[in-house]
Amino acid sequence: VPNEQKIFSIFEPHTELLKRGKAGQEVEFGHIIQIQQVASKFITDYDVFGKRPVEHALLGSVLKSHQSLFGFYPDQLAADKGYYHSSETLAQLRQKISVVSIAKKGGRTAEEVEAEHDPLFRHAQRFRAGVEGTISFLKRVLCLARCINKGWDHFVATVAQTVFAHNLLVLARC
Image (cartoon, rainbow, N blue to C red; front, side):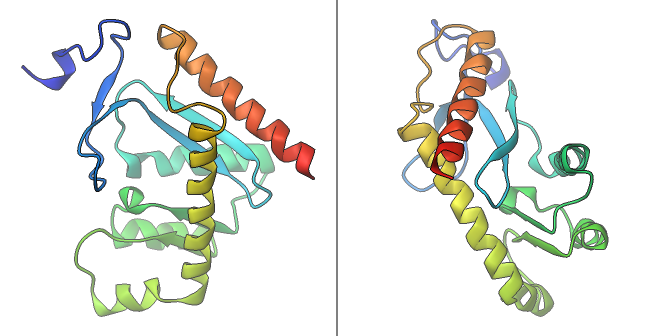
């Protein structure tokens, strides 16, 4: 039976099986959430996906969202390896954004290795590591790791409330 037809939870039938390739967690259950964060640690946009999206296809909507909110493209774009599509896509992004920091999965050419060792690339990846810290904060401190509200609409609302609470805490720290 294909995974799309399986029910993984009788209480939350919208739950999806996620194989993310992380060490120690071969399989997870839930949904993919994408967040966009700026240097001041505010989450400027988020998306909740009912079905796992193709990550590299999301870059266009991420940039469009940032441009509509701020009126310009970001100076830096940092994302994990799932967002890498091709060197041509990265070249197109670099025409709009000064620093594009998306590492490639698998083998790399000498040019790609050199590009990934560039100090600006590394700096942007450290920013991405900070975003991972924000995700951990959302999951552990703000209890997003487990949603106790039932139903898809309530799940999406819980994510929205958690992002709002995060931004209020960031604002309170300023």
